[in-house]
Image (cartoon, rainbow, N blue to C red; front, side):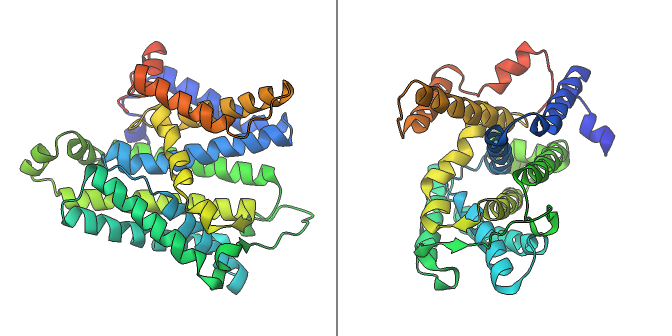
Length: 333
């Protein structure tokens, strides 16, 4: 398995990857709480971007409603914890199953009846909005009034119940992101990765070769929605509050996909690079504006729009492909 993961990866890439991982491991020891919160955001968007990339980047199915899976994962694990005392590491499996079931329903309706492209994207938005309206009136989780997890002062971290300091959340999220990266690499280098590539590039040719397009699209939807549900569980226990307007919103779906689009859709490093660029630079820009005495509430959205415009105009495949060429990394991913 290790040989398969490392197949075709140049030594230079392994060295740079090791340096990045070493930086992420020691960074919390030397930074303050604010920078730590930014790093948590970076990892969160890197992970969710990787999850979205499975559906769009690998299998070529555009989803603009991934906030649906974040919200279902978050509400499921939080409700199980608050109402029944079920810990998040047990609740996460139920959250994943529910999110995967929702994704499979959407995928079945779309792929069985030949809905693709923009219409598939619109279908995902419709389901996310429908669920948001439903949760607005779902009083078991307090509807639009918001659902809150109990917050108390802990003398030490409790990773089994995801209760503790931001540093604990950081290292858990780092571990999840690294595992997601390895898992996606494993998918890409296996038979399913090559089937997805064929379906994404030439679906008619893939079907002619005997690839079951419906089955492998459904597998991509299931994996992507399940992975995204895990990010929702982390979101619920890190922020301790959930509002339907916030977690199922279209804005959240857009936030999730900006990283991979800016970094490079379809590549393993694209979501990570995009998360670093967008989150870190947006926070830095916000700080600079505050330091200069200007408080502009929408400056981050303006920055996101500028980045998206710049990438569409000058780097249509994202930042990673030219950066990979400049670094002389010939990774097949």
